[in-house]
Length: 285
Image (cartoon, rainbow, N blue to C red; front, side, top):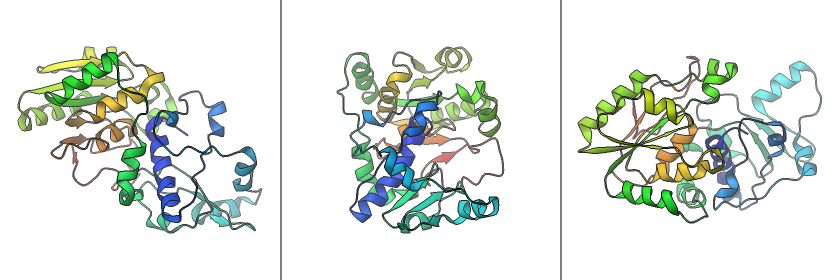
């Protein structure tokens, strides 16, 4: 569920358990039938894609129970007669117990930390490679990015702005955040070239104040968001939003001296513990 970045986190944690147990990872994409904000998007990647059947999904659905029992099960998961376990994520920080689960488990959550899959990072990087060749304008941009001190800058708006519930939880990175990041990049990087990614490129172009060379990427659109993600990963440095999409764009970049700047607060809701969301080598501003 969720956008492409969220789907990638969900796949990565499941792929780690499947790799350790030598078993098959099945993907439950049934909720996308009624989900209007985003499409299922992992088919663009070199993943081991196996879609769960409705019968397989049914085996994992939580049976009717009292409200008290449901609350307990949400906290600790539950085994049924088949040894199947349904685990609901109950915190935003890393839970090491997830990595000890057996091979008949249904993971229900977002799992936003590289700690869930860091020990198979090369597998994840390989499988999150876009299968289609890079052509046309995207290829031209990629060549530009590799020939300069390229910085991807991501502005996430979309449902963060238009959907009331989403805005209450996430909020958006303000212009002051981007100004501080651009200033930090200018101090650290000689002759930076900015490449701006956004689901609202017109807003980004109008409101961002960048005195250095800057290019707005606005031609791929939501149906080819994997192309934007690939371009992001081909930049040398990154200014990410509070978005799993640009998180992955930065993480997939293998440039050894990359500078990654991220927001100090990931959620508008201050009580969420996101200490494990940002890798230790990235900088929070």
